[in-house]
Length: 138
Length: 186
Image (tube, rainbow over all chains, first blue to last red; front, top):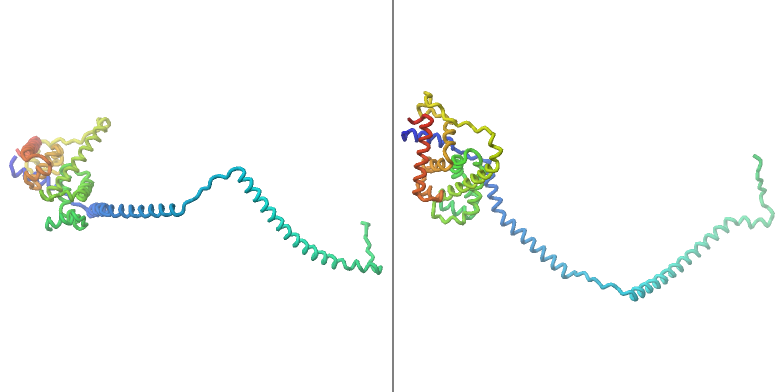
């Protein structure tokens, strides 16, 4: 094979392997590179945020501790219950007294109203009661 | 653009530097990938190559040319892809046994239209090139099309210069034999 033929073959081969990259491919590759460039920044941001969150939560829980009291023994529980009952009784009696007063005032008011409504009965002593006829025939 | 300035920009992870690099080298690297692997996966290989450049540019000491380094990365990415394909084919070989293989028979030698090399059609050339091994195609591309020196090719392929010269000699011989078999270049 002559060198001339070989060079012609190479030209064919070069044409066959010719590659023209598209703009889309360029954009895709550059966007991937940009994303990788931003990655350390993103990671450092996330780690700083996590650090501050951790610091805040540790601070919060150390300053606002929840005290869990031990369970009461039976005698203590009973005394506290009795004490509670006495308190309740006194409270109730107070309330009852209060309701009695209210009831009394209501009764007196209601009694006055009733008596004024039936005041005409007091006039019966004169014998001027109207005749009331009840018709019992249907 | 000055190569040193470009390398500095790449090391500082400047986007303009990657844009310039892409504009300067993507067509050459793409044609290398196309000759080495065929038409598939060119964009994937290029993407992988540029990401590797982004990751490893700090390791580039400037002992070799930037182009040599880039070609080496591209060849390594291609080799990885070839080994992956081999593995995949190993697992799929049972299913492909009955499949019809594409016919790559050379054209008849007595055809008058093929007496001259100019008449060699695109498809015929493709058929002939397919018969060459990937490495032969790569060597011919790097030396005879891209005009790299033997030293540069040796660095790219991580092989001694003597080996490259010998392999290239046999690659050219195989190509010549294929053309002779097909009835060209007599």
